[in-house]
Amino acid sequence: MEFVRIGAIAVLGVMLGLMLKSGKQEYGLYTGIGICLLIFSCTVSYMGQMKEQLLELFSYLSSGSRYFPLLLRVAGIAWLSEFVSGICKDSGFSAVASQVELLGKILILFSGIPVFAALMETISNFAG
Image (tube, rainbow, N blue to C red; front, side):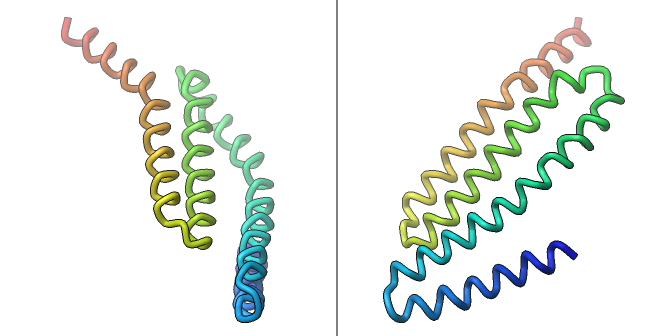
């Protein structure tokens, strides 16, 4: 039900932004950014619930506590880079948006290096 409300806010915000854009373009842009921030703040409330559920899930794993912060970091990087990239694209700065996406991918890659190192260690232990 919450998704329907957020979807309605998004549609109404886009319609308002389009109406304002015909007068002055910057007002449409500001409206779009405001709607994005409003939806972003609504999704932040779900992050606490996700954290609790992931903590419960990782409590069943022996090494879950070691990888939990990594998973949250990667999810946060992906989420924020997508958010910033979307705003940049809406503003007409596609080149900046693609650079933000590239930065997000590189940060995710570097954040995953400890998992790759643990995998290599496990493989080397099996190999002898």
